Image 1 (tube, rainbow, N blue to C red):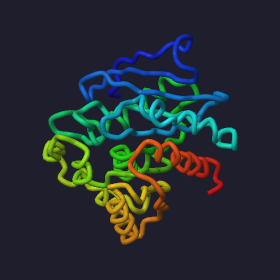
Image 2 (cartoon, rainbow, N blue to C red; image 1 turned 120 degrees about the horizontal axis):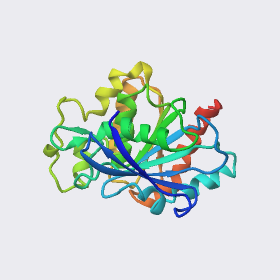
Image 3 (cartoon, helix red, strand yellow; image 1 turned 30 degrees about the vertical axis):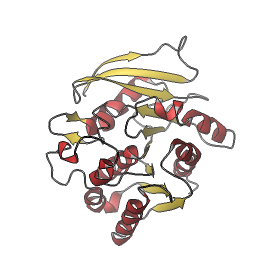
Image 4 (cartoon, rainbow, N blue to C red; image 1 turned 45 degrees about the vertical axis):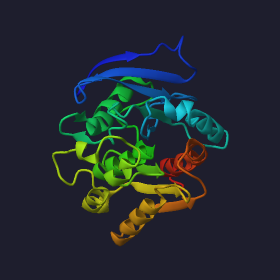
Length: 267
């Protein structure tokens, strides 16, 4: 296991229901942070939702810009099941790491699919090796959720993405570094459709959405059509809105209900 050392916040001093983990990752060669939100009754095998942030962000943005914990608490009043919300840093590379295994700069993929998951299981009460794991994200994090969910279908029970970057070409509109800096050992690594096609018969449940006034809307429609051509089962919603936090705050509820339906078998 790549996780070597972990600092865990003290519940006597930290924000209510919130734990911060700082851990050293050998995949990144440095320390990185994870915010965890958990409320309600603590039981074994509580399901985990990983929320990946977009460019310019860090572990705190889903709560402090998107109010993810407030959305979660509101939905719990409406019958949502208990989940553990896990909000990791992307690894803090440039404007964003894209959650890729980069040749020269660190394996930001394995940071998520190995380090983050193991750190939560080892340090958060109720999280176990038997916990179902779901993955979601926004913008660059949507791309991360789609790619990691498609590449590692055995790890995740559901995938949901908002306003997703669908390629490195999409990412270029948000970052200063040229996409040529995002070099991976495998030439198809960043290609979403490669992984969706490779694992088409074993993908977890999948949904994604995008605002009609979002600069990424056309790319999301292209992805929708490509997945249809691959005969992959998924849900896509074209919604009102732009590429901004009010959109993600409002529509996170769709992700949480989607995962809840999978968890409860009501879908």
